[in-house]
Image 1 (cartoon, rainbow, N blue to C red):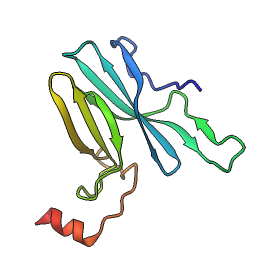
Image 2 (image 1 turned 120 degrees about the vertical axis):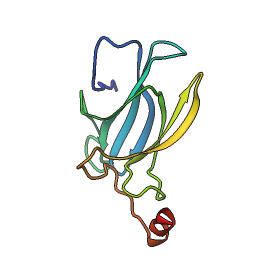
Image 3 (image 1 turned 120 degrees about the horizontal axis):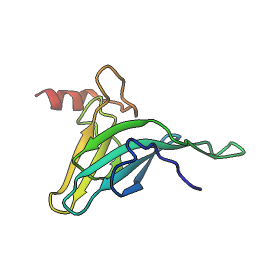
Length: 132
């Protein structure tokens, strides 16, 4: 299957259309990375690759040229993961790996005015720990 990721700007340097994949429920997410070299500049974006339904006649439905849900300039997003309960209302967790700047982990939150893209149940214990 050939994936057709969103194209934010065709004038950018080399792009890896899929740096990592993350399956949440029936949605397959991907991070794409653009880099001019080891020192950057870097840019990443996160988008939906496909919808999955194992019971359907066609279990994988690719999303062609879809929407960019997050664009992260200055970092290479090399890892996607479930949101962390320590960060209520976060949508995903990302890991970066830049040759000279090393790695970072961080929670991604939805843009202002939007609900989380990937729901996370928040327990009272976690909410209390964050607010202490």
